[in-house]
Amino acid sequence: MGINANSGKQKYKVGLGTVYVIRENPKDFVMQVNNDGSYLNTVKQAYEVDAKAGKLTIKNNLYLERGPYDIIAVMNENDDTKPYVVKGPVIDLFDPTLPVLAEKQLTPASNHI
Picture 1 (tube, rainbow, N blue to C red):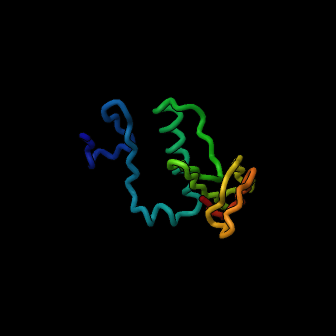
Picture 2: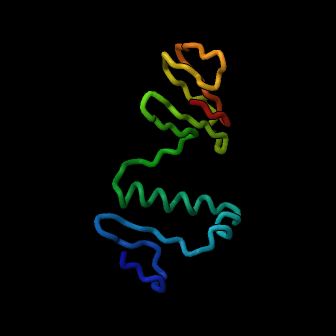
């Protein structure tokens, strides 16, 4: 990539994109109080300014579609406590009776398929 490890820079243009290098032991980085703000600012800069991808949105869920399956995780790690709603018909594979539901609400700290 042509990154000079001794340059002290954090941001490098590589090909058509940009690479950010945080020169700190990952364990030390995450153990510092409020360092999440520094990390999020770097991600926001990369997303909004360098990639020109629009406004960065922080949400409480991850959604992945694989063929006929939806894999969803709703996290409780931020202030957003809204449930994620899947419109049906849907079958919750974690329910042993496998009912066909019109919709499924997933609360924070839950994982469902």
